[in-house]
Image (tube, rainbow, N blue to C red):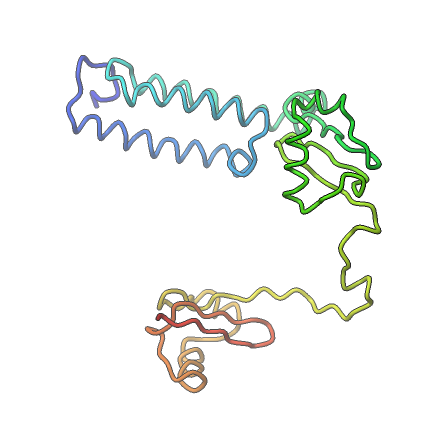
Length: 234
């Protein structure tokens, strides 16, 4: 276990062991931090990601630094991070520090230049974000907020909003999510059981309907209307 401690030099195997331990330790750390820190980088997430990356990088490139000390430091920081997230759910004051309120950039078709400076973005960035949302005219926007995660939320005037089936009084079918029952030649028996089917049923379905075997199937899905869609290997 000497590779944990500082050394004058490390062997190739000790470098490999450091990398392996650091990799799995980071996986555990990411799991503890949760999906929020991965899906969206808010203020607190940015700080912790910056610090953790810096701490773990040094012992992976400098044999004179302890890996153990870096791991202890990271553990404490992640504990503080998780505690901060939990406490921010309880206290509004702390929540406003970690997750500040969105900043209105456009109100009633007019740009709020004071808030642009507050958000530290330029008009060019604002226009770029509007283009990403397929909005070509600022005057069509009733409200636009700069979110803490660095994204923009846009709300158009009703007359510029896309038409929905409800507006046209069309019949709306319920949402139906197809289940994957075969993937890469392997049957998902849990999904079959959820659908109330068995292996004999799917094999017979493939044979009678498509004249194929499981080994030919790249992907097969089944929905509540009992439509079986099959995608074959080419």
